[in-house]
Length: 299
Image (cartoon, rainbow, N blue to C red; front, side, top):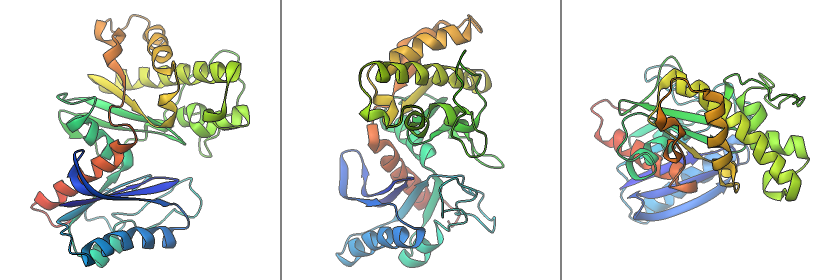
């Protein structure tokens, strides 16, 4: 039995189980300051243990940036994040010391990628990308069946995107202004229109879909050329906007401009909505926990 924590910017989702059909407990915790949020999350698992539940390992998928290098003195920490008050937060230590089980740690989007690869829209593929369009923009890449890690982890939301003709919006990224996240995130939509995407109607909603579709296609073009994925799976709250997927697919064909000329890039399945919805991240943390439980290296 595994525990999982999807540590998002607005909420932490805790789960206990082994997969989509075997979730035995779950809890949503609204994000406050790090100390209160982590304490409430840890208490969820402590209470489960006190009730006699067995936990073999815990997986944590966190918003970032985070330090993922095992052996690094800051392994398990959130590093330089735009979320106020959370830079330098130890995400692994409080659970390792308080619960005494193996822990695996990764980004929230990498966790979601694992889940979509095992149970969702990327099932059976060896190379794919999971993108989330929500408060921010993030992505996880699986290449030859393995998550891409390096000196850090992919920060797909911060790649540069060309501006749409006539777009004078400054962008909302505190680091880069008009990067992918700065132009196409939920925060960007709210800044452009004065209210969140889910509150938009009529012409404003149509305009928002057109803008997001353009920047999504421009961002995906760079990812296609850099990583050659078999599929790009798109999740997050904005991905559910009616008509966005079709508009982004049409725009991607324009952006690729016939190069490299692969017909698969124009097929609906290439740019596909996430199948697991808002459970992709929590389910992925159970896979991280499974990895921790079966690893020969202590976590």
